Length: 277
Picture 1 (cartoon, rainbow, N blue to C red):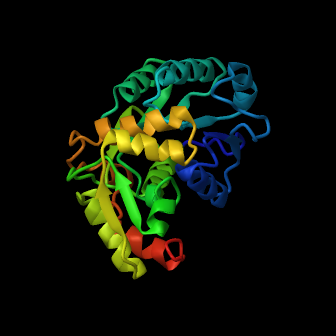
Picture 2: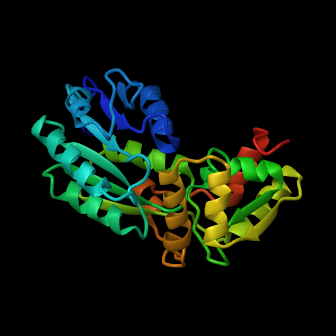
């Protein structure tokens, strides 16, 4: 074990899907955490390097989740600069949340590997929780999900598995220098995934494939910022083009157990009433 109980772990994106879960787990283990966000104390902002050093002061390790996504141009440069600053400030243990099939994410991974840190990379598939805690929730509750994705299959991964792997990487020996590619145990199309959600919630929810142009127009009508419109379209039309339609053993390698199945995620999420209208 690596004993850093006196020093907090900095969790960038500490209010997001994986960061929030990681913070809860570390706190439950009696380990201090520091939330890295614009509302944190001290504040952290990826777009303001002047905030980085104060956020790193006195921490023992850091979990790096880039906002809004590593696919954004310039993300790898920012992650690399942060990783190098962390090492200069004596923060050696870094865990990077990465994405599958994204060239910019691969550059960010390399930047962390080159920083001199004791690194672990969690390269993640599409989160199950995007259906219940993100941009698709409103559409699901409206009964129609329209995306520019056809019959491509994706191994949806549970954010709880990612958080568990991050805890292991931050607190155990054996994960330094490891890249864990994290997927669920099953490949599903978006139509199949939404069908499971409809069945579990007792509702008729339809999936409709639309063009990228129609998707853009829909997001603009919903008044999403322009940078998010471009990002979502790129992720859904390029990254979800079949390049990631395969399973890996990353969860089992990181945790010594099978990954959570999408049906188990759906059962637990439905029980909270998140898809009831």
